Amino acid sequence: QVQLVESGGGLVQAGGSLRLSCAASGRTFRIYAMGWFRQAPGKEREFVAAISGSGINTYYADSVKGRFTISRENAKNTVYLQMNSLKPNDTAVYYCVAASVVGVSTNEYNYWGQGTQVTVSS
Image (cartoon, rainbow, N blue to C red; front, side, top):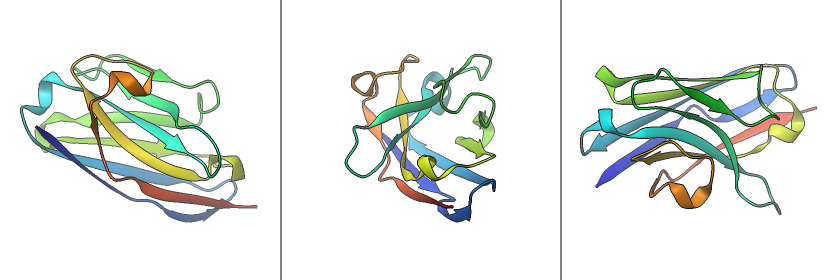
């Protein structure tokens, strides 16, 4: 099993920045791809970003490309999401995910965190 715990959410004004963190525990962290999804009120859960186990390959949704950066520190079993130039429509609950391979669909990830709220005010 893999346990994922997110932190770093909060309230920020449009144009501001936040950094989300996700600490993993349980099975060997290095073999897992990690990622972030988000879900806004009344909307389906959507892919945000993902990173390979080595950290070399990263993937982003078009809506966040150029503004968000995903990274990981395998020594700390932690993945990060640096979010810059935040917009009101980035408001959502952000979920950390883990899987054995990188993917962009919800059904490709079998481990999910509880989520952390990000609210961007206009």
